[in-house]
Amino acid sequence: MYNFVSPTEIKPRGWVKRQLELQRDGLCGNLDKVWPDVRDSAWIGGDREGWERVPYWLDGFLPMAYYLDDKDAIARAERYVTAILDRQQEDGWICPCTQEERATYDLWGVFLIGKVLANYCELTGSERAEKALYRTMRNLYDLMKAGEVELAKWAKHRWYECFIPLQYLHERYKEDWMLELARMLREQGANFWDFVESWKRPLNKWTQYTHIVNLVMMLKYEAVSAKLLGEEVGDAAERLWKILEKYNGTAVGSFTGDECLSGISNTRGTELCSVVELMYTCELLYAITRKPVWGERLEKLAFNALPATISDDMWTHQYLQQVNQINCIRFPGHSYFRTNNSEAHLFGLEPHFGCCTANFGQGWPRLLANNYIKENNSISVTTMIPSELHTTMKGVPVIVRIETEYPFRMDVKISVTAEKSVDFALKLRIPSYSKTYTVNGVTKNNKTLVLRKFEEGETIYTITLSDTPHMVTRPFGLKTVEYGPLVFSLPLEVEYSMKEYVRNDVERKYPYCDYELSSKSEWRYGFAEKQNFTVTKQEGDDVPFSSKAPLLTMKASLRRVGWDFAEGYDTVASPKPISNRALGAAEEFELVPYGCAKLRMTEMPIAKDK
Image (cartoon, rainbow, N blue to C red; front, side, top):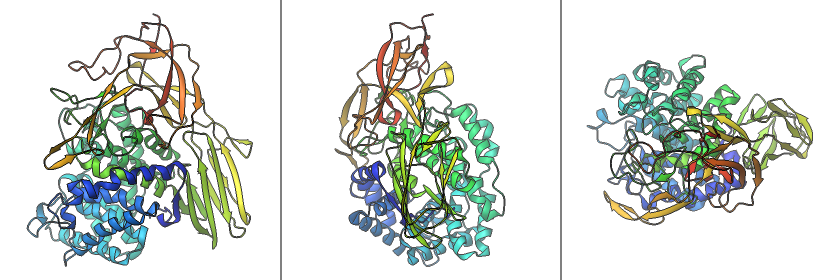
C-alpha cells in the first residue's frame, strides 16, 4: 500500500532495534498487563474503554512484536486480534457497543480498528482478518448509505483516516461501493480550509478545528484520498503546513498544541500524539509525493521531538513537551496550558489523558515500516536508519543493509547482497544540510544518490554526509543550534520526584508511576557572540537517546542574561528574556541533542555586551 514494501521484508538493526527493545520492555510492551483500559477493554469482553485505546495500542504493539520476532508479544497481540474478530457482529459491525448505541458511537473507532486490521493483514497475511476488514468497511457503507450512522465529532474531523484501510481493500477488490463510500466520507467530513483563519491566533478554548492531532492528521487528507476519489494530488499539504508552521511551529518540526493550537511560544506544549501522528503523515506524504522535504521533516520529528518526551526506559511519557522546559512540576493553581490540566507535562502513566499512553508506541515501528518504497524497478530509502530489507528485484533475491549510528554519526554503510547480478535503482535521499557528501571517497553533491547494477555477492558503499553546527533564527529574536537533523539544547540538572498513587481505579506504581522533574541548575543563558561550536562523539550507553550518556555533544560558549519566569508562574520560563544584555563572562557548556534532554533550554538569545 502506497508502494511501501511488505513489512515482513524489513528487519531492524543497530540502535533502531534497541529502541524497539526498550519499547517492548517498557510501557507500550506491558500496557495489557498494567493498564485497565487495555487489560480490561470492552474490545476483548471487559468493561473498560471500548473506542480508541486498544486500537491505538495495537497500532504500535503489533509491528513492534513482529519486528522483534518476540514470541510472547506476538501471542499477546494475537489474543487481542482474535478476541476482536470473534466479537464482530453478523452484519459486519465490529466495535464494542450495543445495536442501540451505534447511531451515537463515534465512527473514529471504526476507522482506527480498520487501520489496525490492514496493518495486521500486511504483517501476517491473515485471510480471516482481511475478510473481517472487508465486512467492517462494507457495513460502514451500508449504514451510511441508509442514513443510520453519520460522521460527527472526531470521525467528522478525521474522515481521511478511513481512506487508509479503504485503499488497502480497494487494491485487492476494486468494488464500486468502496469508491462510493469514499465520496460519502468526504462529503460528510470537515473541510479544514474553512478553519484556516482560526489557526493564526491561539485561543483559550477547545475546538475540533484547532485540535492539534486532528490537524497533523489532516495534512495528508488530499494525498491519501485522491486515488479513491479519482483526483490528482496537489500541494494542499505544503500550503497547510506553511500556515501551521508560521503561526504555531516549533524548533523541532512539530506544532504547539496544548491541546489546541497555541502559537509560537517556546513554552507552549506539544501533545505526544501529535508527534507520532505527524511522523506518520510525513511518511505517507513522502511515499506518495516523493518530495524530499517530507523526509527532512520526518527526521527532525523522529530524532528530536519523539525521544524528548519519553523517559530513557520508555516506562513513562509526557502528554505535553515544551521546547524550553525548565521544570515538569504540577501547577498549584491555574494550569499554564491553554486547554490541558496542570500535570500534562509530567512524565507518567497517563498524564492529563490516556490517548498518548495508548498511541505513542506507533512512532518507532512505523518509522521502520515505512522506510522503504518499491516501484518501477527501484527501491527508495526514506531515511538512513539502521535496518535491513530482504526482497526480490527482477526475480533475484537481494538484501539491502544499512549500518550506521546516524543521526549521531555522519557515516553510513550501505551493502547490497544479490544472489546473481541484477540491475535496479537504489535511491537514497540526501538531506539538504549535507551540501556535499562522499561515496567511497568520491565527492558528490546531487540530492538523490542512485546506486545500480549490482554484481553477484555483496556490494558495499560508504557514504559520509557533511554539516557544520549552525544557528537557526526563531521567534522573539532567539536562536537554536543544529547539526545534521539534530537540534541541540542546554541540558539542566534534573531532580526526580516519584509519585505512586491510585486514581479512578488506575494504579501508578513503579516503574509505571508518575514523576515530577525539577531543575537544579541555572537556565538563564544566551549564546555568546563569539562562538566556536565543537561537536564531540561520545561512547554512549545502552539507550540510543540517553539523557545520561548522549552519543554526541557540542561545546558552546554561553553567557548569563536577564530572564524572568512566565507571568504568574515560578516553574515556567518566560518565552523571551528581559533583554539580550550579557550579565557575565562567557562560560563553556556542553549541549546535548534535544531528544536527550528532559529539562532544557533550546531557544536562547545572542547575549551582547550592550
